[in-house]
Structure formats: C-alpha cells, structure tokens
Amino acid sequence: MTATTHPAQPVLVARRRWTVLAVCCLSMFLVGVDTTIVNVGLPAIGSGLGVDTRGLEWIVDAYTLVLASLLISSGALADRFGRRRVFQCGLAVFGAASLLCALAPSAGVLVAARALQGVGASMLSPVALAIVVNSMPDPKERAQAIGIWASVFGLSMAAGPVTGGALLAWLDWRALFWVNAPVIAAALLLSAVFVPESRAPGVRRLDLPGQVLLTVVLAVVVGVLIEGPRIGWTSPAAWAGYAGAAAATAGFVWVESRRPEPLIDPRLFGRPVFRGAVIGAVAVFVALSMTLLLNTLYLQHTRGWTPLAAGVAALPLALGATVCAPWSGRMVGRTGPRVPLLLAGGFITAGGLCLVRLTPHSNVLLLLTAYAFIGIGFGFANAPITNTAVNGLPPARAGVAGAITSTARQLGSAIGIALAGGLVTAVGPTGLAHASRPGWILVAACGVLLLLVAYVSQPREVAAGLASSRAR
Image (tube, rainbow, N blue to C red; front, side, top):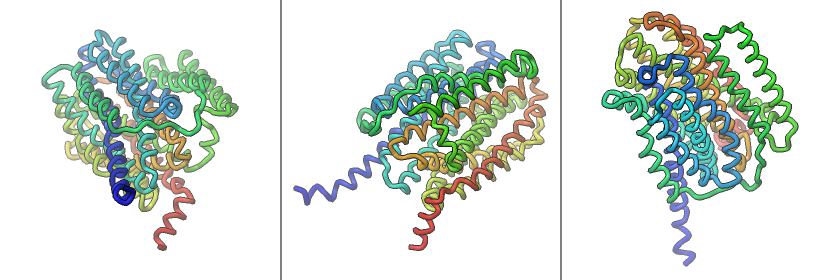
C-alpha cells in the first residue's frame, strides 16, 4: 500500500497548489476588473447621475478608502477564523454590494454601495495571497506564483476597460456592476471545492483603537486632497484637515508602539527592505491610478472618443503588465528583487516623461507608447514589492504582510485619484490636456522613486543565498 501510493503524492500536492493559486487569482481578477471597468465608465456615470469630477472621485475613493482601512484587520480575522471562510465571506459581501451599485438611484447611494464593496474586497486580495503563500513553501515557487498573481491584475486591466467599453456601447453604466455576478459565483463554487481551510498557528487580537485611527488618517488625508480645490488649500477647513490628519497620525503611531499586538507594528518600518517595499507599493499605484483616470478623462472628454475606444487604447498598458508580471516573478526567484525594480522604475519614468507635453492633438502613437511603458513598469514592479514584503515576515504572518502592502497600494490609488481629479476639476475639455501635465510629471517622479527603492530592496540573506546558488 505504501509503495504504491507514496510516489503519486508529490504530483497530487503540486497540482493542488497550482489549482489553489488559480482559484485565488479569481479574486484578484475581480478586484482588478472592478477598478478598471469603473474608471472607463466614470464619464457615463457622471452623465447618468449628474455628478461632477469631484463626485466621481468620491465614487472611486469611497471604495479604495474603505478597502485600505480594513485590509489589515481582514488579514488578522482570516488568520484567526480561517482564511477560506473569510475569503468566501468577502466574495458574498462584494457580490451584494455590486448589486446595490447596479441599482443605485443617486450618487450618494452609489458612494455608500462602493464603500460596502470595499468591505468585501478587503477580505479578498490579502486573504487570498495568504492562502497562496501558505500553499507554496518553496521560495522560488512562491516567487513564480506571486508573479502569476500579479499578472492576473494586468489581465484584469486588459479585460476591464474593453469589457466596460463594450457594455457601455450596448447597455448603460449599471451593467458595469452586474458583470461581477458570474465571476463571484464561480469563485464561491471553486473555493468551496478546492481551497483548503487554514489558520495562523498563533491567534492575534484585533486592534480596534489602531483600526479606528488608521481609518481616520486615511479618510482625512484623502478627503482634504479631494475637497482642497473646492474649499481652498489655505482655507480654515483645509487647515483643520491638516491638523486632524497630523493628530490622528501621531495618535496612531503612539497607540501602535504601545500595543502588544498592533494593527501595524511600527518596528517593521525600521527595516529598510520592508519600508522600501511599502513606499514602492504606494508609488506604483499613485502612478497607475493617476494614469487610468487622466487617460479616461482626456480621451473621452478632450478627444471625444467612445468608452470602447478609450478602453482599447488602454490595452498596451494592460498587456505590458500581463506579459511582464510573470517574467518579473521568475527574475525575482533567480536574481532577487533589484533588477525588476530597476526595470519598473525606468519604464514608469519614461512613460510619464512621454506625456509631460500633452496637447489636445498629441500623436496617438505617442499615447500608446507611453501607456505601454507604464504598463511594463507596473508589471515588473508588483512581484518584487510583494515578494520582498512577504519574505520580511514569517509565513504564519503572511496575511499581515500581504495586507500591509495591499494597504499601501490602495492608499496610493486613493492619493493618485485625488491628485488627478484635483488637477482637472473645473477644467474644460480643451484645457484638460495642459492641466494634466503636472500629473504626468508626478508619474515620472514615482518611477524615479522606484529606482531609489531598488537600491535597498535586496536583503542581505537573499543576496547571500543567490551568490551561493550561483557558486554551486
């Protein structure tokens, strides 16, 4: 009996690991499609509900704010109550919120439903990543899996704008949320069949004071960025926001440094490698979210393109990310994170610089080249950032590591949307191209920041291990 069953076990285990990865990638696909499909539909939502640019920013950032605020607590809940259970709960909440978005009669209801979507999404990405990491004990295999994981987001970026444009061509903006239903149903069924339940060996207590303070910090910072152009950057309300953000940040650091099991351990940021990964995650998603929003508004408002044409124009960005993400994962497994991060920083910088002189009649080939550069940079960036952060903590705390970097990503998305919207608020279609130029400078600056992060991204133990492997 032993002789006949033992040889087949490794093959069965390997198949199960990659099946689990495929199922979990559905959640990343769902979150990615929802982000990009809503971006391409913002002009249609604005027309349908009578919402200005500032209101559209809240429709996007209500989702990202709640998502960023709850990611770490969701990771801790998954470690405590079971990762598959929390993952499935997130799918159910996300699905219910998508139905509310599709039926929303007003902008206020849509913003509230988007916030509820953020609650569900907070239980998807970091929890699914923790499931994947715990299913892949080998570091090289894990790096490849994370590369595939990141490429799924690129694939969702390709599917989101084109699918959204097609839906808007035949239906209305509400179809952008109905489309989530079949993906959610498939993910719920497959997770029940293939994904094993897992928990962290040690149970972490929830940090409610830290959770509340983190939510306040993110909400005030992004709220000031969105409302600043309307209320005035030097108005009493703005100064009150600055003071509130500073006080909440100081309170968060003070509380977290004194709790035995903090939501975010400040000591983690004393490690240059981990700190660099978090900063890099923020920079990448500031650049990405700013690109997506400015691209949508410029192509549809200034150039008069249809949503479908605008979605097709984003394909070079999405395809660059899809192709380069798994390649980046293999590079991380062979050489460490530094080389792919250098490539990421270089391409994002080049993409931003291509558009710093944008005009209403800029050459379409220049636009597509810039989008391709930014997409390639995004594809190279995700795997080394995620892998560096995850390897900075023990496997039992993979949920926390994934949640911190996911929080940084969503914070970057929220900031990018707020800054991009602030640049073009109250700007007419003819002036939008010129008004967006500082945004493309900021995209290039994010690429330069990634180049700096690359120099601190190679942990000594990783570099030593790679050198030993090459010697053998």
